[in-house]
Length: 291
Image (spheres, one colour):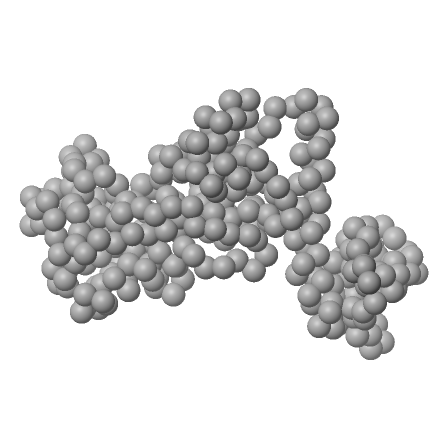
C-alpha cells in the first residue's frame, strides 16, 4: 500500500495549531474560520490515517503521531520553501548565491578552503560566507537562509542532515612573552599548571568538551577561563586573557608577532561538521561534501 503524502497547506495549518496550542489562536493567525481550520485538520488526519491531537474541550495536545509530524513537518515545509525559491531563481535566470554559515570556531580562511573545490567548479555561482553562533547557525540552515552550515562538532542534529567534511590540527597560541613562546612543540601535560582559554563552558560546547577531554587524558583537570571576546579570531585570545588558547592556526608568529602558535603533542584533530536541510538537493553542496 502506498504511504499517504501530506498536503503542504494542511500541514501548515497543523503546525500553526500545534505551535499556538489551540485552534482559536491558530485560526486568527492563518486568517481562517475555526470551522475551516478544524475541517482541514480532520482531513489531514484522514489522509495520514492517524489522530494528531487529543481534544479535551478547547484544549488540544499532540498525540505521539502528532509529535512526530510536528518535528518532520517543520523540516518538510522548510525544504519546500527552499525548493520553491530555487526553482523561482532558475526560472528568472537569477544567478545562484550559495550562502555558507560558519561558527566563530572556524576562521573565514578555513571555511573558504572547504568551499574552494565548489567555488572552482561552479564559476557562475556566487558564494556568501556568514559567521553565526551555533544556535543561530542551526536555525538559519533549517529556515533555508543558509544553504550549508559549518561548525566544530559531530553531534547529530535532530532536524538537519550532517556529515564530517574535514579535520583541522589543533595547536597552542601563547603570548609572545610566555615562558613557552620559544618552543616549537609542547607536550600537553605541560599545561597542567597553566590557564587555558575556552569560548564556552564544558557541557555547552562540543569543541570545549573535546579540548577538556584531551587535557583529562593527559592526566590533569584544566584550569580554564571563558574568553570575554566572542566572535574574534581564536588566535587573538591570549592577548585579552594572558592564557593559552587551543587554535587551528598555522605554527609561527601571529597577531603582529604578539602571539606565538606552537605544535602540541600528542596531535589533536578537531572535526568540521557540515549541516544542511534534509529533503533538498544541491550540486554545489555535493561538491563540497565529496571533495
